[in-house]
Amino acid sequence: MFFSFPHAEKTPQKKMKPTDKTKVTDTTKKTPPVNNDEAINKIKKFREDGEKKLLGNTLTRKTVKFDNDKIKENIKQKWEKMDVYYDGDKVIRIQTYPHAGSSERNEEFYIMDGKLVFAFIQDKEKHEGKDMGEPGKEFYFDKDKLIKYENRTDEKSTNLEEEMRKYESNLISEVNDYMEIIKNNK
Image (cartoon, rainbow, N blue to C red; front, side, top):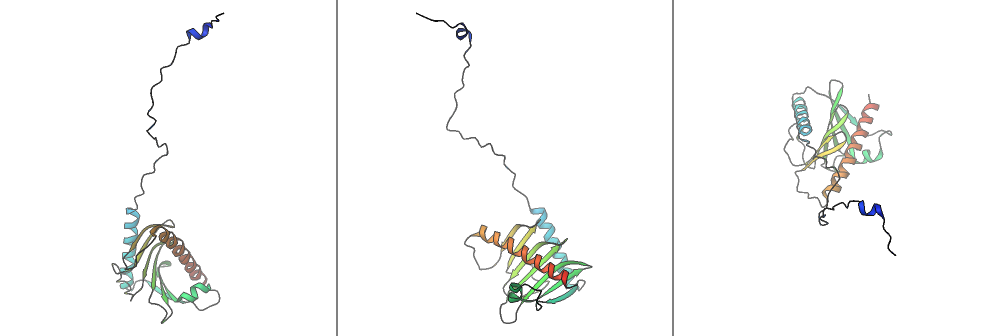
């Protein structure tokens, strides 16, 4: 016995296009690479202007010694004091100094609108206001993110990404601690 299904005979068949199973399609949206040149140039100009003001003695300097009980122990162990430089009533520069005989390291920070934008770490003699281009490590920050790291020392990194994450976290935290000390020392 043979059964016939009328609807089956009338249903047109779709033609399937052959697919290339070797192709992989990436459906994730690609974010264009961030161009930090504008932010870096702005920071360089800010630092350059700050260095000129420093050399021209137009900044107000206040020395803060790290010798009272309100200072965190890790800061007191590492640093003897910091010089805070004001342009009007705004902190624009912080320079830290180690305890005599303990280290030759100096750290310099530039602050724009209350935020860290530039840090310079130098392990040798410091030439304040004239250190641009000298050996050291330079860090450029934008919105609490490290956007450029330039190492002009003989010290080579074994894991650059890890080193950058560490510096990003530590330097921002350090400057926030200094800004709190400055606020409490007014």
